[in-house]
Length: 100
Image (tube, rainbow, N blue to C red; front, top):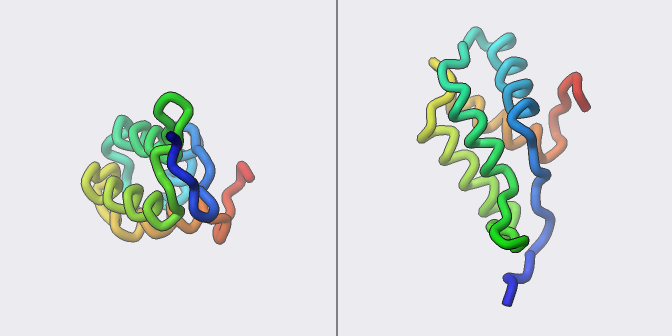
């Protein structure tokens, strides 16, 4: 039986969209992308499904996992904690980028 979703789940992002977010953050903060594979992995974790079943049950769980993953994967040379917060806010629609 599939788990019941509780609330909204944040959208799925492509690797290109995650790179866009990182590039915008880097332009504003002076950080540099050092691990593109990590950004692609973060995209894959944005809203995964296994056999069509969502992995995340709540937005809070999804946000917490993505935040922790950004910190663990360390895609930027500096400011990964701040990037994680910006990333989650972009996904929640609180911040916008040029591709939206």
